[in-house]
Image (tube, rainbow, N blue to C red):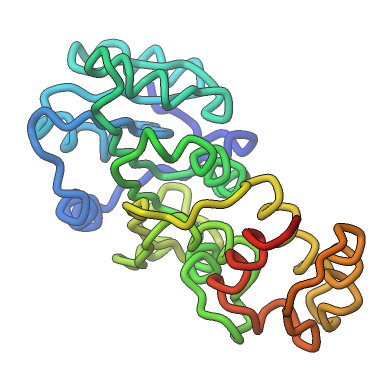
Length: 256
């Protein structure tokens, strides 16, 4: 029986075999890799991955799709909202000690892609790399450079912790049903030695800075720093989008 895409789950199923082959080539799955796929759907990407891996864990919220996937003996099906999945626990379970880090892949539901990215950021120590299909404009924001219109909170938060690259364009006609947007594949590799910060402070600082991005920082971040008795040197006569990631990190490290 044909599965009808469910709008509430943001389902768009990949059907273009040439694009699927290109994605697999980008991921380069190797036998024995501890890999987790988010949102396997109708298994268009799942099948070529598991053929190369031998075993694959998949996270699927749709009950009907999860039941289909369980028929495949080489798949471990986790029927859950991905935002509730403990990736650290999955990594520990893969080898019993947590020494193995996960390779995470998936066609992320566009309606909750940003929450998924932040959920994984919170568990990044369990991750070896990530390859995600996302709305192209989201990836443009993720990899954006300072002083561009795409540079924002998402850029800063993710670039602090990952090296990222837009590696493949995916047109709407590659899906059924076709989305109304262009898609792309992003590669995300956690930095081996990320700057040490208080993540809560950093997150609050960046969110405050970009809360009114058209105003100079004196009107937003300036008040936040003043409330924390910050006496250091930081140029507040700029807009949030003009400040490089390294300066946000240094500021977070210097805040009392």
